[in-house]
Length: 67
Image (tube, rainbow, N blue to C red; front, side):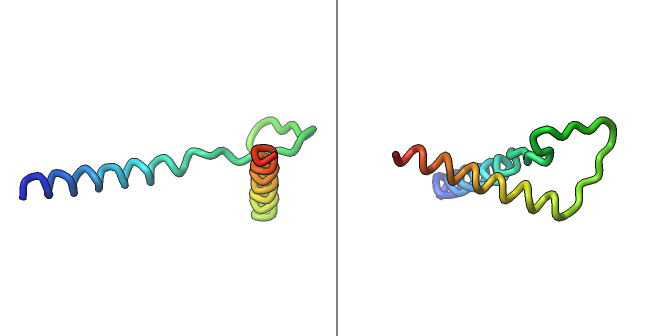
């Protein structure tokens, strides 16, 4: 009984750590050649475009791994 509860607690802490690590990706909001100084407001369209660029970059990396 003690081992089961300890095992369950360890699994829960591992699940929490995995959730915490998912937030580590940085979005590339500035396109090449853009240089902003000071505060910049990003529109939802810019976030969507940055997400699409990230997906394309990841797909290209996967293709390179397969070749």
